[in-house]
Amino acid sequence: MSKVLLGFIVFVAIFGFWGVSSYNKLVTLDQAVQAQWSQVENVYQRRADLVPNLVETVKGAAKFEKETFTAVTEARARVGQVQGSTSPNDPASVEKFKAAQDQLSSALSRLMVVVERYPDLKATQAFRDLQVQLEGAENRIAVERMRFVQAAQAFNSARNTFPRNIVASLFGGRFAEKAYFKAQAGAETAPRVQF
Image (cartoon, rainbow, N blue to C red; front, side, top):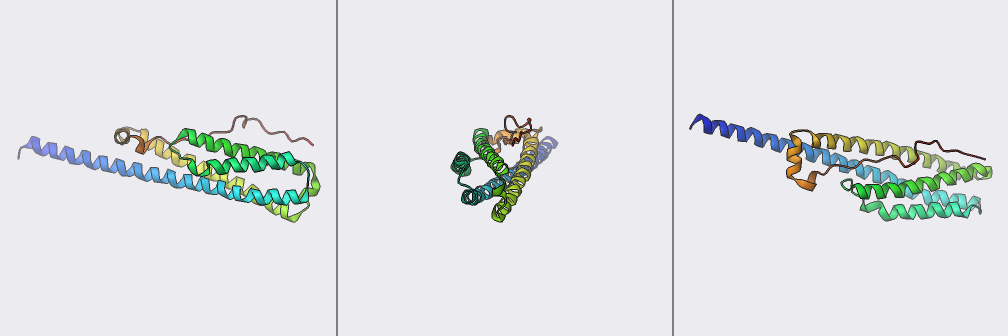
């Protein structure tokens, strides 16, 4: 066997090993992003399940501010419509998911302002308990969104670095760049609470 042929075989073996290794790394990182996305959906679902209880408790204690309750209910319904159809590989669907969640967050913020204006609502133990749970849910959402962004960043960094980007490009959409969550428009301005 000639040295040239042996050198070619060694080169092909090294290149093949590198290609398999790169592919497996991308699969591992892609699965981490998918798992973290599922966790993001999980905490949003927890909040969506909690909201009807909160709304019913507040409705029982107050028969006013109907528009606020309606806004929360409608926003939750919109969240339910986009909840299972979002893919982290599709920036448009992530944006639609985020927009629905932002609408729910906005409606919940208005609900909290109503509560501040009417202290007797806060007097019920059930409402206080649900308010604590809702705050916990919002904190969980923030943590899981942060973890998703970290997983997406790790995947995108690995995917876009040379020479792994060659392997990623060979598989087309299989290793598409992952979308990030972005801040809601106007989030840089602190909310004003007036009584």
